Image: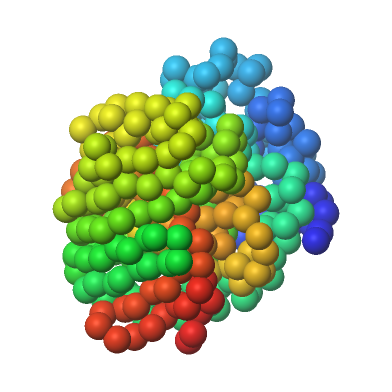
Amino acid sequence: MGTLEEGARNAVWVCMGVAPEENVLIVSDRATSSIGEALRKQASSIVGDERVRLVLLEDLSERPLKKLPEEIRSLASGWANVTFWAAQSLPGELVARKEFLALAKRNARHGHMPDITQKLMEQGMCADYDAVYELTHRIHEIVRNASKMSVSNRFGTDLSVEFNPSWRWIPSDGRYHASGRWGNLPEGEIFTAPARVNGRLVTNLLGEPVSEKYGNFNEPLSFDVVDSIIQMDTLKCENRTLRGEIERYLSAYPCSARASEFALPTNPLLMRLPTIGNLLQDEKARVHIAFGDPYPDETGATWSCNTHVDMLLEQCNVIVGNDLKLMENGDYLV
């Protein structure tokens, strides 16, 4: 599809628009150090070595992180103009990553790449980001004033999703050139926090903390959602280990089982490819719903949570309002 170097160039030059005289902070780890180094080389080619800092988490703290290391906090609090988080995700580190993200949004612009792999750099990061930008904003114009949508597929998903007109749709278009802007790379989606979700959800791909461990799993996870809350007594999955793990995660905090994100994919390249079992890329290729934290700073939703788990939906039919068929079997009709 592409190369690690091409993906890193897209991230630095196109998505983040790094300019001369800017300072760039790249947070990585030993498992992802080749990607951190590729990002460093591309940034250094623009701003020079002295304006780029590549730090590995294991050099600063034991993992999983209990808190954000002070050196990273300091660099993200005023020195950096552009930041990247390109590291593997470990259970229990979401709080530290959220702290870093808050600092990055306040002081810089940020490319968020948790669980990034070389495959993602060679696929999703090598997409045509002009095409991603165009499709993202075309879909945004269609859905930004929608009051409701229905989502179904042949696997048993059948959901009614309602929206709050005061909560924002976020076009994650892959261009983060202004201070305070950020996105998950590879990019290409539009998302909001749903006001109310009801119906049946069936998925075979979850986000962290289970995506890396299970990937695409053969035994679908299914459950009912009533007034946005997962009904735990309806949760079914033949894989008992997976079911127990997701039950514990969804019960961790008061809002862990509350529908918190509804997203539509807008990366044309990835929408044509099979999923690979990594939500960082796969969520840009399929409709998905998350439970837990609704990114309140972005969406305007009125709660927060220390957990967030995405659930991917294959081959969706999406109807906007009462009659506008936006998607059929996972393909846009507009």
